[in-house]
Structure formats: C-alpha cells, structure tokens
Image (cartoon, rainbow, N blue to C red):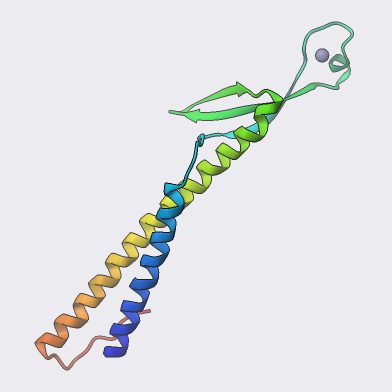
Length: 133
Ligand SMILES: [Zn+2]
C-alpha cells in the first residue's frame, strides 16, 4: 500500500515537472501562423517564356486553413523562412498544448487513485484493491 502511494506521488511529481517545462516553453512562444508553406508551379502567360515549354515558375505560398476555406498568400523569397518557422512554431505550440491537456487528465486520474488509497487506509479496510498500471 505505502509503496503504491509513493509510486503514485512520484508519478504525479514527474508529470507536474513536465507540465511546468511545457508551460515555460509555451510562455516563450513567439509569432506563429496556422498554416504551412507550399510550393506552387504556374505559367506566367508571356509568349515565348520557358514556362510554356513545361518549365513552370515555382513560388512559395503560405497556405492557411480558416473555417473550411484555404487561403494562399504569396511569399516573397525573403519571407519564406520566416513563414516556415512561424508555421513550425504553431505546430509545436499546439502539440505542447495537447500534451498539457493529457498531463492534466493523467494527474487528475492519479489523484483519484491516491484518494482511493488514502480513503481505504482511513477506513481500515483490509481487502485492498489491486491498482492498475
Ligand atoms: Zn513564364
């Protein structure tokens, strides 16, 4: 029983540490964009241009999904890297946020187990349930 309790406490403690690290990281987040950088190839329409012979002009765009619609924003070459990094920051932010939610659920679950153990102790029950995991 007491070993289970110390294991539960240890798990909660470790999750709290991970939680704190995630919060620190998320607080440091900088500008981000919900989208991705893509390359589109097109013809310019000028007669005699190489794009009429199959060598299309490639340009980078920022593709942003917004309420079911997709917007394409042309990226000047000097903006490509900045946009890509902002999109990557958004993905990491959302991933950290999802982990945060998961940790909170896990911690609550562990506290429920802790409560069960300690209520049993106080009630002086002998038929201890085996805890899972
Ligand atoms: Zn062309």
